[in-house]
Length: 112
Length: 112
Figure 1 (cartoon, chains in turn blue, brown):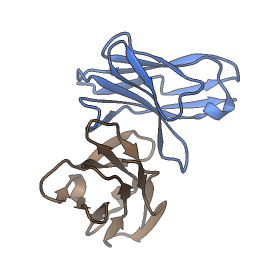
Figure 2 (cartoon, helix red, strand yellow):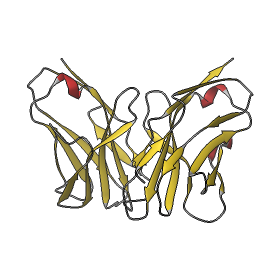
Figure 3 (cartoon, rainbow over the protein chains, first blue to last red):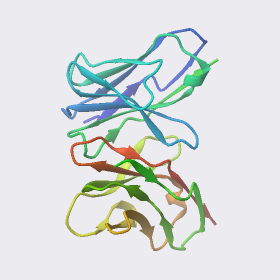
Figure 4 (cartoon, rainbow over the protein chains, first blue to last red):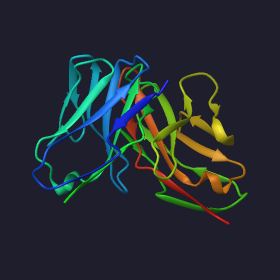
């Protein structure tokens, strides 16, 4: 099993460009999450999903959109990237909302 | 859980010395407790978890943590650290049927 995978691993964008980050999990988990990690701020939840076709806002949702069209995939979109969105993005999945989360390796995004 | 506090942003310790990383949380209900570890340039992985039962929990790589309900703490300890323990450690708490709340992280710095 691959666990949780993220594509791409690195990306550089110019301000105003758009992109989509892909997260895939092969553990049949219902719950999936997108976090951003910034120095000294730990993990902050952007959006999460409690099942196929459902999404919800987390702590810092502004400037991001998500979709969960298939149970195994969770997409994070940036419609118009800003320098403040320079960060490392982690996807995670879990079998329950309050349980252990399994993380992907991360995507390092730089917005110039 | 309304908040999770990791009291130290960095903890320097000599190799082979003991270490304690502190975590306190605020909640008035039963909680699940987790410690995750993030090695440099990697995603997070579970170190140990407390769901119920014995308050002393043993995890991977010789780490253990003790749940103290009266002090709402879940401190992580290791009796003798190794250079390979250099990483950032995150405490996370969830109230049953609710999502994880994350601490800001503690960087463990091992001095030779």
